Length: 130
Image 1 (tube, rainbow, N blue to C red):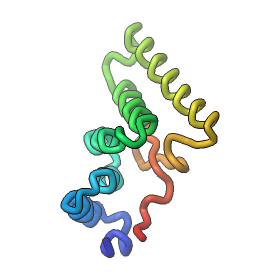
Image 2: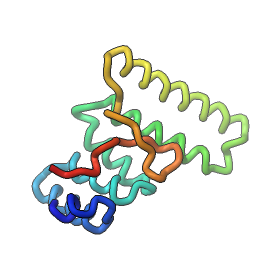
Image 3: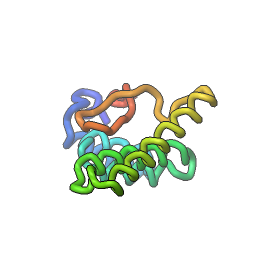
Image 4: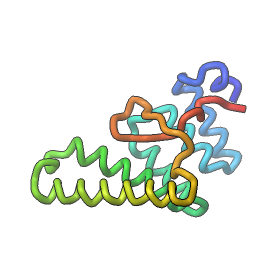
């Protein structure tokens, strides 16, 4: 934990901290640290979505939609009719999640920052460790 606080950009320190959180049965915290350590790795994002699903299904769905949108952008199918329809569907779902959150006076994620991963939105300020 101190290593992450001293050097929040150190992926190895974050992964070690994630392992410690796993050992302490903090599945959500561990998944989040892995996302922050390797923001381009969708596996970590999807594991995070699985971890928060029981307590925050809207956040879990938002993360999954973001991952799927990012994958669509990189796919060979992106410009096909089916690909364009899929993108439209995902985009509409993403916007609906955001609208619902705004209507409730919240957001699916507190603050917004893109972590060097185009199309993937994640937390602002979680790089700090208490």
